[in-house]
Image (tube, rainbow, N blue to C red; front, side):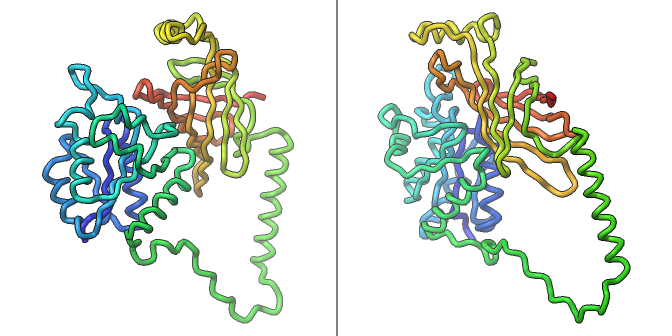
Length: 340
């Protein structure tokens, strides 16, 4: 079977999302139906040959719109998407020539497609297309929406892919006249476990909950006080304002902000929303999409976005992991310590 779903992305900030997207779509539609070219020199003969093989089946191109897709420049300071040798440009041109349906997929906090009037062909078609979002903190519903779109375009799931309901247990044979002895032992063990858990909770001991006050060490070791809240498997994050007026790493941006008429920029805040991931045998993990906002007295606008990936320690007192900021295109260690 030839591929019908093609994923195009900017390597600098899209390869992780493209890989995860291909993996999840492959589960539903089959790996052979999804084409993801990881070659650094993409958009060449492999891409052209594969997408033209799918011409009769009307291929679908998922174009991952990330900050670097539009803003990346070449060695002369010119937009890469304007160059004939840009791999994403070649992939989009080939897809349109092959009659592919194109779905722009907005990533990394982008809420709307870029202004098409400022984009070179063929990217100027983006504004006329129906676009979708792909967010770390809403990954599952966003993927489900894309799956529905692909089905509507005639891409067929593999047999059994849509069935996630486990089979019911087989009915028990004729019940014994009285409960076996091991049942009483199991009930006793369960009661003891519950009693111990309640005792630990009453003493303020470790739990698997993450709601509460935390002291965070984030970008370049900055110390931030923040609050995590939980509702179901949704986790939200809000930090206190962080003073940046005396920080050398913010000097250039504060100057830029002042020059563009934004006034003085003296503080920022982190806000985020994501999900808690529970799996048997391991501590809970958090996957939170971040926004960096200027303080409310300066307008509260978002100036950066990123992601925070954390795992809770066994004693429930520490969250450790990584923070990624899109402006830096890099990640650093992150540690959150629970505050009483």
